[in-house]
Image (cartoon, rainbow, N blue to C red):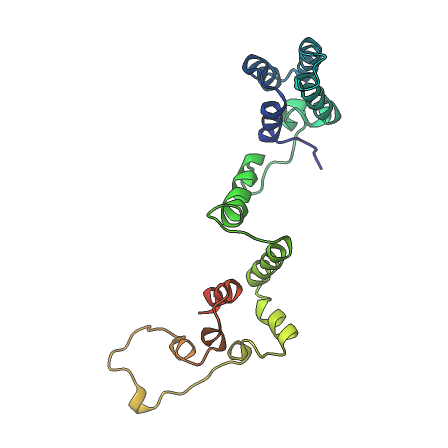
Length: 207
């Protein structure tokens, strides 16, 4: 395991703790150039220079908080390759990506769906939805629903529907068609119930 801080979060803390634009830029430059010790010294000097007796002036306190954060994680400030750490070459078909790629995935998959667009989730509701989604991806959702509902909610999904077409039902035109047409046109209890947000989510998955 290699410990390494994501640059985005370091820059975010710099912006939050340091209000002076020139000081922000200098700290970022020292970090980008791989000079963490000089960066720590600069933050310490800056904190002392802006210290004031006024209680409402929190610049020095915030700068010292930044120093504490950086100092406590100084081992992960530099990227692994700038610390001389070598990792095995990726196997065929595997491509190594930087940490920012995962940050983008978190934003796309979680943040945009759960925090914006005027959507609101309770902690319990968000956890339950996440569990439902990963069980769906693992092809375990139907078994989970069956276990907790005794097969009442979606009985259609619990059995294999096999129907032999008679000559009268034979299509006039051959083609792939929709193999689930009989399932879609059958009775679905959720469609006739009050459409809450969770029921709409389940309908979106199965219908």
